[in-house]
Image 1 (cartoon, helix red, strand yellow):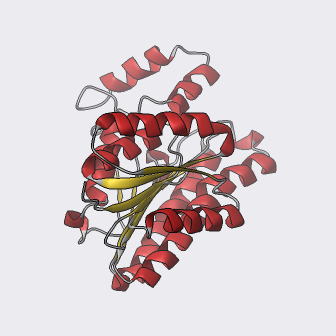
Image 2 (spheres, helix red, strand yellow):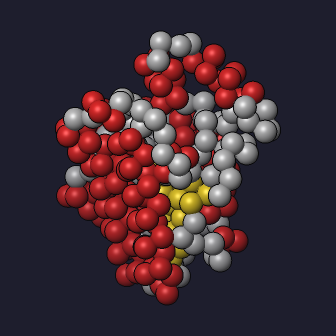
Length: 275
């Protein structure tokens, strides 16, 4: 297999991150899989799924907490040592991609959300949410960008936002604020990194069938199927999104064809929200 480069995918043990890793592997990237140490078994499972695709993608498992600067730095150093560079970074918690031609892509897919009334938010929950959803994305963006600039071949950086980052939502004040921050960071980074051939974008999904959405339902004391059926009925295309729908968007943003797209936060949401 002639690789398109290496992609670093953070949050790769979970549904959206896993779907992104599988899609980018099928697209021809080598894949650096990242999540926290407690999810190393799940990461190995994703590695096995990539091998089963038969696409010849090289893979590696790299555990790190994206909210800790030293761990993010060590993560990227380890990825470069193994694969020779980085082309794509996907950060939701955070995902990173590295390409053989020396360009770098990063997808940051790690993220956390603790719903609750604005009046009841405590500072510990606020700080932890911003540590992962904002500081984690910032660190992944910054260290990926430094590597890409040093390589001199451009790259793709892709972050995880949310519909809550475009429209504030009740019971999600902390989460919404963190995702609005990701949008601002994505735009600012895009303006500075464009001259280096690096694009910076984010995805902001609507309702995606995932553990996070299941968690919202359980907190509300409702069967997740009830939530999904209700949301699908209110969506113009008549269905909810799947992790593969997000992965398809990331596939485009990680590609050479997306070179004129930067600073954007794109919403795969079935028509639930327009901007």
